[in-house]
Image (cartoon, rainbow, N blue to C red; front, side, top):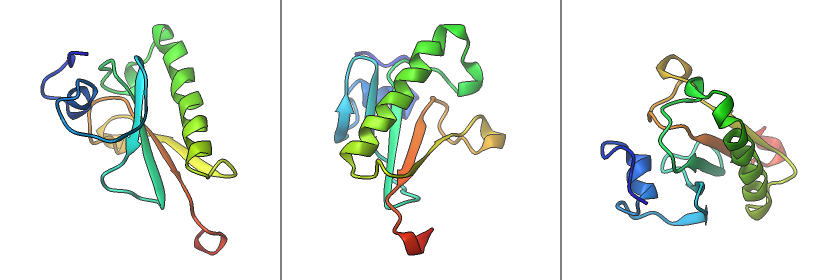
Length: 115
């Protein structure tokens, strides 16, 4: 798959131009570890199609939104944290988004005394 934007790190990862170990990958999305984890388990669920932010989602992205959440549920089960985790979309710079490509954070793996 060719990247939609050559300046986007996630597009370059999707195009396999940047080495990355995937926990899951299909034609629509990819799942991999965050390079700066904020939790014992911190995965990113990233669509391959370049969409800058969830604020850019419209009705055409309805199915993609569902796919991202379902992939997160499967990734949580594979990571052994299906009993509890957080899903986070950062929307825009004021919402904490750093990379201008939609991505869903899956965070979990805390022990009871870390919560």
